[in-house]
Length: 243
Image (tube, one colour):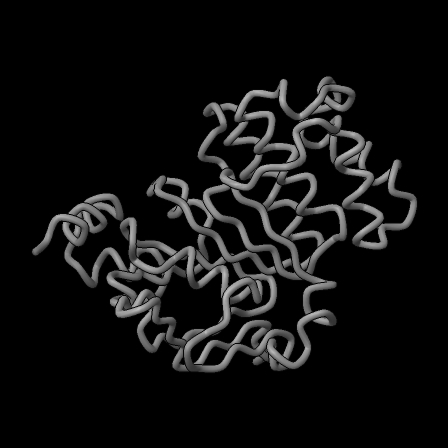
């Protein structure tokens, strides 16, 4: 049975001064899908995410989320969307619990303390709830940011290198948890990572960006076959190192 895409991007372009960071890209994301956004540094991944979150205005093109135009329905759409990145900071002077309570109120979360306690347990982070964010390790901050991103039970989750600061054990548990939430809730996830094994494990499909354009799209094994690579990492290195 064909389902309508939750994200539709058509001819999306973003130009900064004379730099074309994103160059006329089009793609869709479907309900319950994990879509990997892959490419070397400077490929346009972060700019694409920023446009999907309405943080950056496209130069041209169209973004629809839940069938609605993002520009015209920003507040309504973002109510059911969330985002996490290893590179986004929370207020350092507040404790983890204080931060999460602030975000829970902003998101209109019912029974926020119960929801926060559940997520702290899921991410094995109960021991940091009363610590100031400034005292946390990068891995602990990453887990707190992921908890923040799941507070409102989003229908779409945008993740920018969410496990970059995690040790292998916690990274593996985080991937398992995200897959579990995706299966239980039908959540759609757009995911970037420089960990090629992670991209293969997590992604139903992959979009490969290079210099702002889509150069391949499909299941991980299809992208690998397209470039005749022995692995996804081999493909990445070939593209990153070509002239």
